[in-house]
Image (cartoon, rainbow, N blue to C red):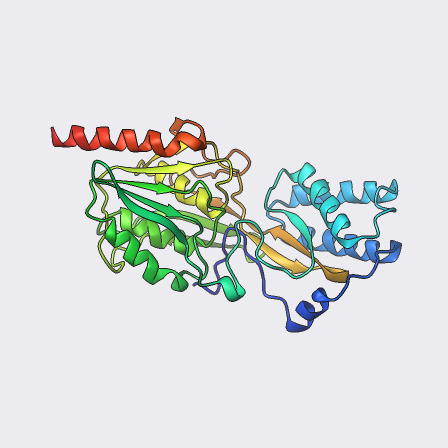
Length: 324
């Protein structure tokens, strides 16, 4: 299942030859090279982008701009990639869709890969006044096996607190498998359907559930949970917040999130460029929709800089109320 399912910014591994070639100085882009890049983008969008009608609009826009000569002066690959990203996003409004120059490293919100793949997914973890546990999650690391032991340790340490604050303000996303792993500590002994991902190229839907048998101690399904968000919270981190909000399992405190719900795949383009193309969409089992383009709207809207203070106050009040 892990091999088949993609993350909220999925990137295909390119061949070693492509990676080596991408590290060489990029040749200047002439008219022929730009045309080859545009043709490949059109082909990939037509066959892969989650919404075929939007793909057609983007392709028509690219052809019209090329015919007007808007790209004629662009010989630098990096600048051309940036311009293409702006152009595609102007039509699609899809923040996951973009063009990159150089090696296909993980884009914003994508899975960790290479030497940093096993780095910590967590930031600070501490016990606040009022027996409130605070856990900062910096990414929903990929693959989940790389962070499973750390997740078990940190979530188990928070399990006996009377309330829990999870901080996603600096979290740009990651794997839906890791989202499900962490969320499993916030529910009980029955699996909970959290989210589904539909992929257009394969015409396949993958479902994600909590694991009641997750290792370690669980915080459980009854005690209060608060999730902190910011405008930087994106992709898989948004899924975590959206899933809990839809299930009424957490109160979201902070800012409306970035608004990226389309799992994406990296594909090579000619002359060292890479297209990050969204191939799927999230389908929440409760709302039957997702947060694409609108973000996760907080239950308590405050600035990101005061979200922790606000949630901590709410948590202490909830704990005091439960004990009275």
